[in-house]
Every structure is written in structure tokens, then in C-alpha cells.
Image (cartoon, rainbow, N blue to C red; front, side):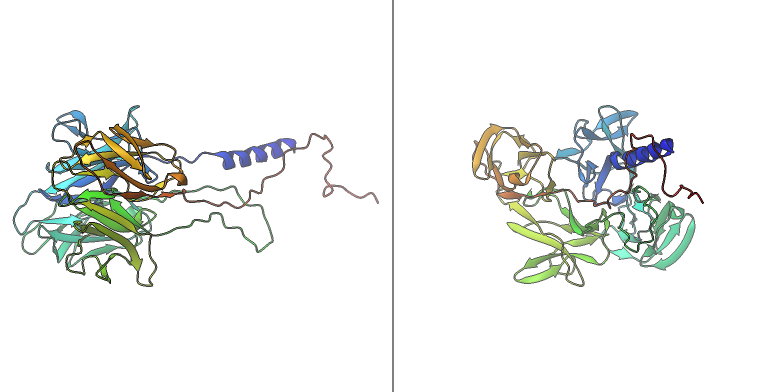
Length: 426
């Protein structure tokens, strides 16, 4: 009996004290596996639970050699924590790796080199999708229009139709997909990958006749606006920003990216001059000095708002501050840099809630707390001055577990008589 109690107590301690393990992954924006040659850039970064993974590098293999983003000729340019890649080879594969050789899963892209009007690509996610989610496949032309197409699903054709929807995805939906049109356009083939959602193991509850069942897990799940690149300041006329509505990393169905302009609330893709839709993304070319966006559903529920500042200074002295557009988590680190229009970072004075430090090449904030929130900017000796932007800090999501129902530690007494096992002498 003592041995059983000791074992049960050990199991409870093990279940309660086991660390949470999260794998570093390659983040891709836009999350699309096929692109046209010469189209917009792809933003790659190494993330751990949604935050930048320090010490990890985006890599690829070319000509038998492994190359690091930004270090090899022709392989990307570094923009903050992002590797910005203009895809050109018919097929390319990327991954994240740290100094010890640990690697993330690999992500592949296919480039459509057909430059005619008939050329099409299949809109299919580059990253794995979760079981139980839905995916909408579309066939898109170079001019951005989606067209009716035949969808080839593991060799079987369906259509023609404007889109193919896979609901409640399972592992059986994995395989090769492509599309073709009556006009002769044919997309490359790409693989749809499916992964199970992360599993959380809890201690087994004790048997009870009570109807008061503690929930095993309470999560404050909330739709948020995803931003890529996650930078709050941009130069006018620079690369596009990709916005999407996500719930726990997956596309949030029924939610729309919105903004206010001239007192009116506008939907992405529906209002003149406000973005273009690319799959689940709202692709925006920022132009106003300051713009704010958010996600909203048909009932009026809204996500947090995200603001951007546009640097209109077109001279060589113009600079922007590299600062996250999305809130950062307490305990994380943030590196602020001052960047010129030509992409170079420069030594600068960093203004932190009105206080100047520097000049120095970067300003690092370690182990961030709520006290670090406030307005930040940078300036250079050459006269360049960035806009001011707000650094926002949020606590990590709280997971609430029910109180454990573990047996108490064994008594040091050797008297193990149980009242339930006693037999009354007649």
C-alpha cells in the first residue's frame, strides 16, 4: 500500500512539473506555397510560440551548399528579424537552424514561370494546416483575378468551379494538389500538409459523484490582426504589408480587415484604394502618414487595433525605427534599430519616452516589462529623424488548470489501518 501511494504521488508531481516544450518553426508571409516569378517578396522568420527565436537563422541549400539568409549572394535581405526573399528558382526550400544544428520543419515554394495571361497558380498554404480546420483552394491569374478551374486532388479532378473547399481537414486530405483552366493554364503541383493540434495532458481527475466538473483548461482565445512584416514604421513606396485575421495561428473565418478613412469604416478589398485580397490576406501599400487597422466580424466584435507610421522623407537622410507593430510579451527581448531607405542600419540616438541614449548601432531592451511601454524614435547625426511609435507590452496568455487532486504524501506512521477495512468483532 505504501508503494502504491508513493507511485501515485510521484505521478502527480511529474504531471504538474513537466516543462512545456515548444518547437521553433519557420514563419511564412504570405502563407502561400505558389507564387508568380517577379511577384511580391516572401517574408521568412524563425519563431517560437509566435515570438522571434533568438539564435536561429533562415537557411536554404543551393548547389550542394547550405546558405544563410543575408550572408550568401542573392539569398534574401535582412529586415529586422525577417529574411525577405524574392523567389526565382522553380522550386525552393527553406528552414530555420540554430548553432547546434537543430532544425525546424522545411517549407517549400513553387514559382510559376509562365508569363502569359493563361499562367495560373494554386492558392494553397505553405505551412501545415491543423486537423479540423477548413481550407479554400483557388486558382489565380497573374493579374490577381481568381478564375473557374479544375482542381486536381491527389490525381482526381473536380470542377470547373471558382474554388474548392476542404472542410474539417484530416490526415487523409494530405497529398498533391494543382489546378488548370479551360484556357490552358496549369499551376504547379504542391503538397497540402496536415498536423494535429498540440495535445495538453492533464492529471487524471479523481472519481466523483459531484456534478461540479472543473474544466481541464481555460483559455482566453481571441482573434487578432496578424501583421507581416511585424514592423510599425515603413518608408513611403516600400514593400507591401500583409494583414490577416487569425485565431490561434489559423485563419479566422468570418472576420474582415478594416480601417477608418474620412469618418467611414472600410473593408479591405471592397473600398477603392484600400488593399487587395490575396487568399486570406489583405495586401496594403501604406501611404497616409498614419494608418490604423483591425479585424471585425459580422456581429461587431473587434480585435485590438494596430497602427503604422509612414516616413515620407525621400532623401538619403530619412530613417525609420525598427519597432514591432504587434505587442511584445513580458520577459522577451526587443532590438531597436534605425534604418535608412537604402536598407542600411546606422548608428543613432534612440529616444525612449523622451530620454536619449547613444549614439549606438542598436538599442536592446531585455526582459521587457509593462514599464517599457511608451513612445520611441531615433535620429542620426546627419539630421534624419524617424516618426514616433508606441511599444506595447502584453502578458503571455494565462492557462488556468483545475486544482490537482493528488494523494497527500505518505505518513511517516507505520499504522496503516483503514477504517474502511476494519471488521467489527461480533
